[in-house]
Length: 72
Image (cartoon, rainbow, N blue to C red):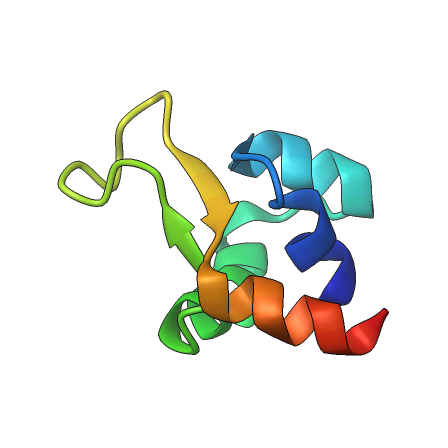
């Protein structure tokens, strides 16, 4: 989770995040990692109005930045 938060300090595409953390299955990655982080409001979609946009990226929120700041 910390790695995902660190990676999304700059907006990053799902495939790029998965590659960086060595994960292959999109559905389980979304369900196990991205959705919980979104529910905590630690990350957000850059285009929330169109969740399936091909250029969709994930970005760290202010809450996520505050959490990450306490982890370093």
